[in-house]
Length: 316
Image: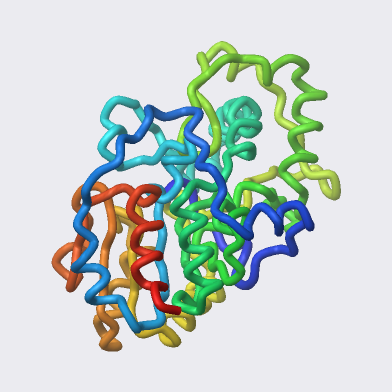
């Protein structure tokens, strides 16, 4: 999984407000509030340009596309400095204490997660789609930053944290609405200072978790789960097929910011090779698909993608 995994969104982005549309007409300033400044590099993009120029692209993105927006990942170069314990589907569904732990941490992490803004990499991919060079994005991320940047065709392999659903009756609720209910049951809990974690939650002492009160579904009182695919959970068939359809329409696959460790993403690299689509990878560090790619370039998405897009769209 790239952070958490679902299948909430399969097609076009939700309609943007007029102000959001205006923001997306040009590339937004990247938000880097929770990470160290990134120094410009001299990554050689010529191999990527040579392979991708003149081809319509399907783009597969992972956590490395959002780290420059301040959202941490699981497997990037900086991850070794942080102890991570990602949510497991089996534990969440079967253990009330696992659910309490997740929601106690999520109440603290959610406000900062939802306030993250697209960086230059997200904006560049949206520009590539507007120029007709990219058909859309298949993303392992659950942050909806591609939508916020203006991408229209987005397949969310692992869903999005912006909604929750009931494990008993299937009813859905906006994550913001659930936040209000959780805070009403736990006054002041969101004021805790804590480090943001990849699942959109945050690190908390066990004593605060033990004291946390979990609320249930408004319809039936059942247990609620973020509408994402957790580790150990399967990507819904309709979502997988939407990604496969996008890949079949394309003439090449560009992987951005993914280690491809999780099979839900690596599957598209394998399928690209099976149907004769060349594969290019832009990622900081090694990936599971390095041996499958015609071209691999080591670099940060937010720094390299704007330059790549300029090269691919030069001359119209």
